[in-house]
Image (cartoon, rainbow, N blue to C red; front, side, top):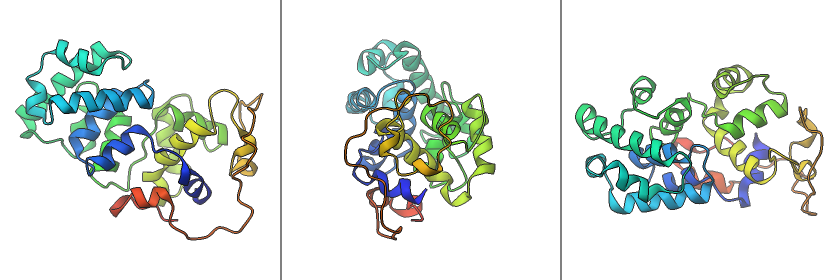
Length: 243
């Protein structure tokens, strides 16, 4: 994990992480942007979130938008029609049942339309400083199995398995590390194994063909140090990685 923490130093943060940082971990911003991010590329998520938040900054103002208005603002995120309906309904519930605030428990978050464990965990980690949650998306599910850390079929199974397979100190950071690494190096097809800092520890489950390397391998040749990484800089307060 320490090697990954340093390896993502010069890589772009995932879209929701950037939005969380820019909004000072505002729970509403994190909730809505994570809902939009499902099965959607980061640049599309970032642009759609920005358009939506420019028009409506609070659950109350967003609930007043029609589903059609939300659709136009968030297009072309995947399943934008369904997501628009979920966003509007979620905002209505936040206003009517939670005083316009995003709840801070797993049970309450899962009761919101369109919110699954991935979204709920990320909101709890980024906005409520939880150190007891692991957020598992497709990248985390895929890479955890490729590494041989778990042998699971679904993201929910992976989440539960990772609680047993990893040290609690890393739980809030697993998503940041593996998503960033999965977007840049450990890709679904033709992973750049030659550029991987944890190549020697990886079981490479299911890898039949590797992609070309960049030519400048980031594998560490010196002993690990305790220098602060870019991830640490962005993850101030309770989210600071224990590197």
